[in-house]
Image (cartoon, rainbow, N blue to C red):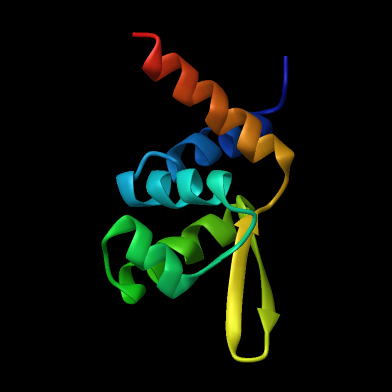
Length: 96
């Protein structure tokens, strides 16, 4: 059996994906390699502030990473595992 910490971290990962706005952000990043906050806000249909707030949670959970280019910050999925995990969730919902 894994440690309590392991299961806590795993639960936190799923918890981070439980918010619809965060789910939309991850979906958008699965479609594009990188997006800036304003592009995500436009695609998702919300404000830059709302996106930034949710990105902070996703960054803290190591689900997304960022790259600054001048004054613009571009976000991408942290690694292929996030894409795979999300893709499995999509398949599960689509097959219902």
